[in-house]
Each structure stands twice: as C-alpha cells, then as structure tokens.
Amino acid sequence: MFTTLDRISWPGHPDKPNEDICGVCQDWAWVIDTSIFPGTAPVMHPKSDAVWLAAFADERLSSLAPGAEDGAVLLRRVMEEARTAYRAVAPQERHEDFVSWPLGAMTLVRRKGSWLDAWTFGDTTAFVRQPDETVLTLGEAPGLRDTESAKAAELMRASGSRPNDILSEPVFLAWLGERRERQRKSGVPAALLSLSPDAAGRLHHESVPCEDGTTILLTSDGFSALVDLYEAMDAKALMEAAIISGLEPLARKAREIETRIDPDGKLFPRFKLSDDTTALLLRA
Image (tube, rainbow, N blue to C red):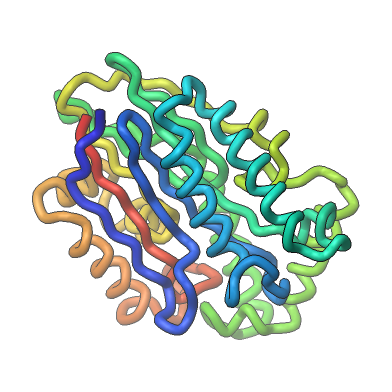
C-alpha cells in the first residue's frame, strides 16, 4: 500500500489545458503525460483529445488496478476501452488514422511484497529512494531527452527562433509533417499510451527492491527536467528536496529556470518555454 506524501500538476501555459495527470490506488500508482499532433481537431474534448485520454486512463486505472496482477495486461485493457469509447464518438475516418489519435507517455508502478515493478511508455520517470538512501532512476527519459533537445537546438538555430515561437516556424512545421508522414507510412502506432492496445507489448519494464520506507517519485518530463535537462540537481538531491520541502518549491525552481534564466532556450534547448509539470511523491 502506498501513502501519498505530496502531489502537484501545473499546466505549462495558463491559457492551455493541462495534459498531465497522476493517480494512486492501493499498491498501484501512475503518472501520465499526453499529447497530440498540433493542429489535430479534437473530437472527445472541447480543447484537446490529449486531456480526454489522460482523464480516461486515470479513471479506468483507478477502477481496474485493485483487481490487476500485471501492468501490461492492465494497460492493454485500458487502451482497449479507450479505443471503444473513442470510436463511439469520432468520425469513421479517424478510427484507424493513428496519427490523429491522442498519445501519452506514462509510468505505472506496482508494489508486490518487497519489489516494485515499473512499466514505462516514453519519457516519464520513476525515482526510487530506498531506505539506505540509494536512489534509482527508472525509465528511458534521459536518452529521449537528449534526442529531443538536440532537435530543438537544430531547429531553433535554423529559424532563429525560441521556445514556443518555434512551434509556428516553417522549419518546425516541415519537420513535424515529415515525422507524421513517416509514422503513417510505417503502419505501426508509436509505443505509447494510445488507442492501440498492441502497444502494451512494447512497454519498458523494470523491477527493483522496495522495502518498507522506500520513497517513490513519479514525474512527467516537465518535472524531471530539473535533473535530465536543466541539471539543477541530481536524482538524489531531487528526492531529498522533495521529501524535506515538498514538490511545489521544485516546480517553482523549474519555472524560474524556464522563464528567468533561459527563456530563449539557448542554455537548455526545448520546444516549449514551460511544459506541463506533474509529480507524485509516495512512500511504501
């Protein structure tokens, strides 16, 4: 059973919906960071189908997790239900057009006995602080972050632009269009939370010791940026600060870096000035 110590979820921009969510239910917990290709018209939510997918997955995980035994099986069922719900509303031409679907990075964890299992799609992260103060980082976010930051730097140099503004630049839109077309031609939906249940077979899975007193921090990439992009601290310092002072000072630190120290994205290349920022702090 997890005890929730703290949680936070801030939108990256006050005028845009928060496409992150986090939740906990008994021995299960999760963080979800959804998105959708820019310019895709919503059909499930007034502003963003990504918001709908995050809320749908959160609700179904809360209902289904208590009876689940395996994270991949659980997520496959959630995605099957999401697909059914989407097709009941979306126009026929969107049913199989997976590049128009909402997608999500996510980390799902379960404690069973003295072990913690973590299933990950994309660039969300689980930081695990064991009773001896050893800190483990679970997931693939650091490598994915390096790739994204390098591409952001390349496109901002080419356009002379900055975070947020780059999203409307022709060089960015051309790159995005090529990426969308490559994905469509591949015929294979991305290995992310989506309306494709088969993606559950491509989850990244790790198991680590989880004795009583272990602390777990689940984060979207907007929060883990403190470690894997801004290098404001390492994982051990992040966990210590979260336990001592809570999550809000850390979220504020990320915002300070983004809006005051590096608003032009020259020190830390990125596509958005500030991303949705979500974290869930738990104790086993």
